[in-house]
Length: 519
Image (cartoon, rainbow, N blue to C red):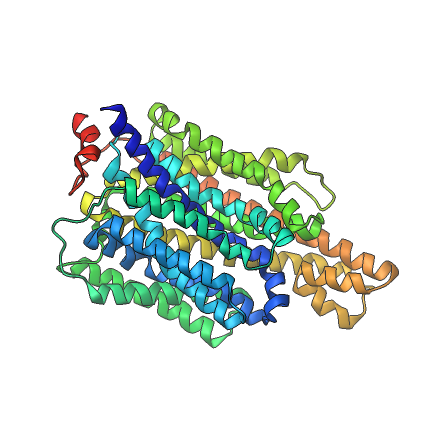
């Protein structure tokens, strides 16, 4: 392999990283900005919720059809178009003057993200050989996962120095870099024998995922008795069951679900879902702890998440070498167990704790996530046929999104129940008219405490902080338990045998073919 060929392959990967990074940023950057958007756009609570929901629904619902279209039309071509859509809608979002306009632009951003997310992963096996792929996945995948904890840090800095539109405008330079890189260095690849598009399967996938994710997202706000929540939580699984039934019998299925008959594929998918379930649930409860319980502003909160980012970077840097030494089963189990240990230790913090224990546990969670997720993604791409890397990656990302949504919903429910249970005993001296607001959230309790003079306000604040910390500890313990159980199942039942990998070359330029053929 010539140095020039090798360099171009890694340049192609660096073109993919900015697009993955900006999607990760966009998943969490808006959370920090919601109070600012509420004031600037006079947005209602429902509109603020839809600024997040519109993006997630478009992203989740279109992932599978987007991956299939990438396989059919050309992954490079589709990714370039998706980057343009995402970039233009991001710039437009920064200039919106009403909440409803911003919600619309967030939905369009979700459409672009739905095409970028699976295809950015699908192009990796078309460029790199089996030996190089673990390192390439670690570098490329790190972009997405680094963006998640970077979101609050970037948002805090931007909102401190610039107008609210900057949190969307920041996407533009990342998109421009990605566009130039993909245009110059990523080779075109597609399924050379694409079959007719499965429109029925596409409709069932979009309807089922969108409906189910909507129900999961809205449940914490509207409750189990809300007709819209119940309807979507019932119709979503029914449509997804119909999708499964149809795909297993269709002549030209949207995605080959027989891939799940491969235990390595199934176990790896399960690991990605479990890790996303735990990580998003923890970020969901941990950010308010840093801000409201410990009193940090948005920028300081982001700074305190840097050890988590450092853990992800360190885990990504060594995961490919450890994978060669330890094997898939050990790496997946080790990653799950390391994250579980970090979460279990973090559950020991209380409202008066300093930062010392968090400084130790956050890197553990990051390292464990990197070990497990990047190993799982490598196995998934190893199993996928070359013609289905887009569809298979989209299926993986869809299940990850469902896992994330479940994590936020379930962890939010656990947090709320424990918070209210612990808070009840601390409100005996608080006027009745203030109790409902304090019981609703720790932010509501802090707002009420700031308006009550003397001991009453102080009592509410102390009780709310202690109650929230107790709820967060329960969430962390639950996440740790799920990960320990998954690690045990992987260690006990997953085979460590390395399956042969089929050639992954379809219409790749000669400079990208050479390294794979040489091996």
